[in-house]
Length: 81
Image (cartoon, rainbow, N blue to C red; front, side, top):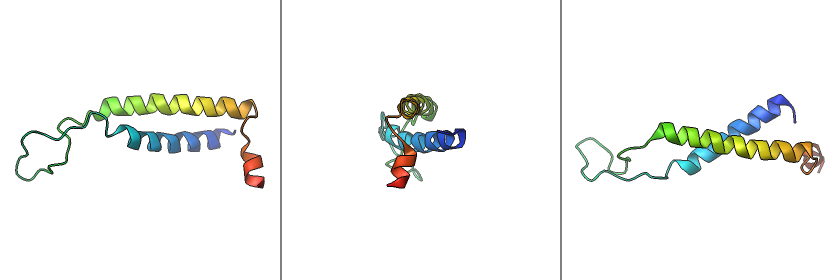
Protein backbone atom coordinates (compact mmCIF):
# COMPACT_ATOMS: atom_id res chain seq x y z
CA UNK A 1 0.00 0.00 0.00
CA UNK A 2 1.39 3.39 -0.95
CA UNK A 3 1.76 6.26 1.48
CA UNK A 4 -1.18 8.23 0.05
CA UNK A 5 -3.47 5.20 0.27
CA UNK A 6 -2.25 4.52 3.80
CA UNK A 7 -3.01 8.08 4.91
CA UNK A 8 -6.45 8.03 3.27
CA UNK A 9 -7.33 4.72 4.94
CA UNK A 10 -6.07 5.95 8.32
CA UNK A 11 -8.14 9.15 8.12
CA UNK A 12 -11.24 7.18 7.14
CA UNK A 13 -10.66 4.74 10.01
CA UNK A 14 -10.13 7.61 12.44
CA UNK A 15 -13.48 9.21 11.58
CA UNK A 16 -15.35 5.91 11.83
CA UNK A 17 -13.76 5.16 15.21
CA UNK A 18 -14.40 8.67 16.63
CA UNK A 19 -18.12 8.28 15.95
CA UNK A 20 -18.04 4.90 17.70
CA UNK A 21 -16.13 6.30 20.72
CA UNK A 22 -18.06 9.56 21.22
CA UNK A 23 -21.04 8.05 23.10
CA UNK A 24 -18.86 6.33 25.74
CA UNK A 25 -19.28 7.98 29.12
CA UNK A 26 -21.68 10.64 27.82
CA UNK A 27 -24.30 11.47 30.43
CA UNK A 28 -26.84 14.28 30.27
CA UNK A 29 -26.63 16.91 33.03
CA UNK A 30 -28.88 16.63 36.08
CA UNK A 31 -30.01 20.26 35.69
CA UNK A 32 -30.42 21.79 32.24
CA UNK A 33 -30.02 25.55 32.14
CA UNK A 34 -32.01 27.81 29.89
CA UNK A 35 -30.66 27.83 26.34
CA UNK A 36 -28.83 24.49 26.67
CA UNK A 37 -29.79 21.29 24.87
CA UNK A 38 -31.06 18.63 27.29
CA UNK A 39 -29.20 15.94 25.33
CA UNK A 40 -25.79 17.66 25.48
CA UNK A 41 -23.31 15.71 27.62
CA UNK A 42 -22.30 17.24 30.93
CA UNK A 43 -18.61 16.45 30.47
CA UNK A 44 -17.80 15.32 26.90
CA UNK A 45 -14.07 14.64 27.60
CA UNK A 46 -13.19 15.13 23.94
CA UNK A 47 -9.43 15.19 24.51
CA UNK A 48 -9.25 11.70 25.97
CA UNK A 49 -11.67 10.43 23.31
CA UNK A 50 -9.43 11.81 20.57
CA UNK A 51 -6.39 10.10 22.10
CA UNK A 52 -8.25 6.79 22.40
CA UNK A 53 -9.52 7.14 18.82
CA UNK A 54 -6.00 7.80 17.54
CA UNK A 55 -4.63 4.74 19.35
CA UNK A 56 -7.42 2.44 18.14
CA UNK A 57 -7.12 3.74 14.57
CA UNK A 58 -3.35 3.28 14.61
CA UNK A 59 -3.71 -0.32 15.81
CA UNK A 60 -6.34 -1.10 13.17
CA UNK A 61 -4.27 0.56 10.45
CA UNK A 62 -1.17 -1.39 11.51
CA UNK A 63 -3.11 -4.67 11.35
CA UNK A 64 -4.33 -3.77 7.85
CA UNK A 65 -0.82 -2.76 6.75
CA UNK A 66 0.59 -6.07 7.99
CA UNK A 67 -2.19 -7.98 6.22
CA UNK A 68 -1.44 -6.15 2.96
CA UNK A 69 2.30 -6.77 3.27
CA UNK A 70 1.66 -10.47 3.98
CA UNK A 71 -0.56 -10.46 0.88
CA UNK A 72 -3.59 -11.61 2.85
CA UNK A 73 -5.49 -8.62 1.42
CA UNK A 74 -4.92 -7.14 -2.03
CA UNK A 75 -6.65 -3.94 -3.11
CA UNK A 76 -5.58 -4.52 -6.70
CA UNK A 77 -7.36 -7.90 -6.78
CA UNK A 78 -10.46 -6.34 -5.21
CA UNK A 79 -10.49 -3.58 -7.82
CA UNK A 80 -10.00 -6.05 -10.68
CA UNK A 81 -13.06 -7.95 -9.50
